[in-house]
Image (cartoon, rainbow, N blue to C red; front, side, top):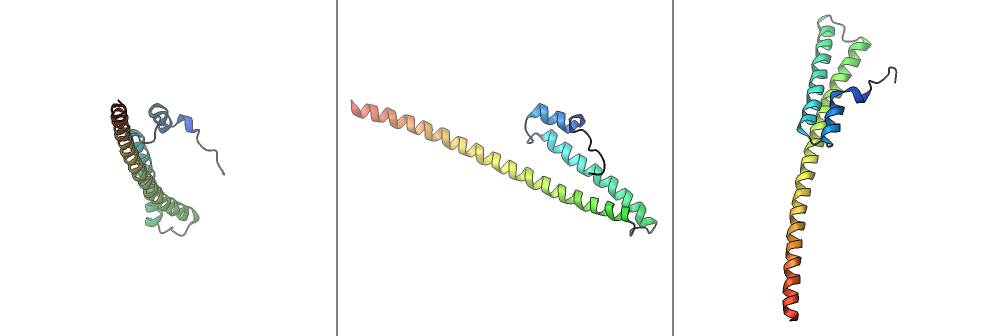
Length: 118
């Protein structure tokens, strides 16, 4: 990279994740969405300034335009990931419920089997 990356441990999302211990936390999801929205607004404002002055062919304007497109892709990807995580969480809960039912049925069958032995 050309410039140094910001230290992740000083970002608000790091503390939220450290506290929640999961990315499924509503606060983390909201923070990601808000960060993407803020970046999108800032990039669009910068690009608008280039558009209004007729300088959209300049390299920096092209980089900003690419950034806007990348933010849109990240927003889509983030939404898709969270949707998939929610579906997996629901599936996991369903499997746990089925497991509990099977354990209960297994216990009933053991009791029945013991009673038949006597």
